[in-house]
Image (cartoon, rainbow, N blue to C red; front, side, top):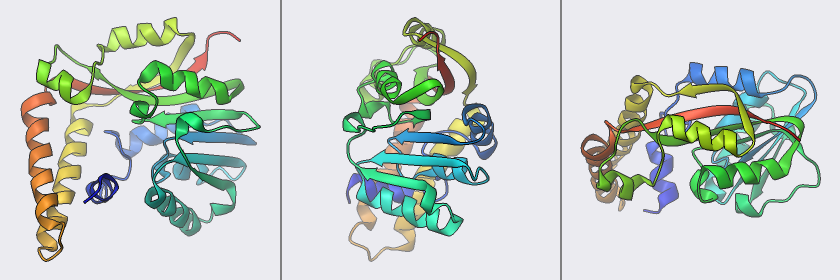
Length: 245
């Protein structure tokens, strides 16, 4: 099974591909989405869950999503059709780092996709290129809640603690105007949902050629979470404005 297939099955019951519950997503969008006529861009949109929630109930918002996954973009388009917002959503299958638009956006999102750009600050640099004057960025990434093990760093990456992460963001020319640190309940619910959904699919489809691999992957990822990074890794989502310019 390829990565997209594994991800799709793991997120069946947790479509937001980040450790955030529905209330947290709604509150972040309330602080990030501008009123009235506005344009939003999601760099690394996946199945378009953030954009679809932003578009739903905001009839004057238009949005564009960028992702390399054909399957995820197809899923986003089908969901937009069901919600009746497809005419206000444009989807692009390409690398987010290579995306170019003739017009700027009032909101640029990138939650859980910093690996596409090589880290948090490069992601913010990419977002800045697309941002209209007075616009906002909604970005989510990991941080270390406490000192990680070398194994955790090797597995997840070289994050900083929360205070240092915010120091780096502000030094890069951004001012946080809202933020959310995922709770332990949100972090645990995300992991239980992902690997439980994947394992359930495998058990429900024992004749599928990918069943054994899916079950093994679910067990391995669950063990990594519990044994390697559960006690040390956190997730922060920020609404940012450029400090100047």
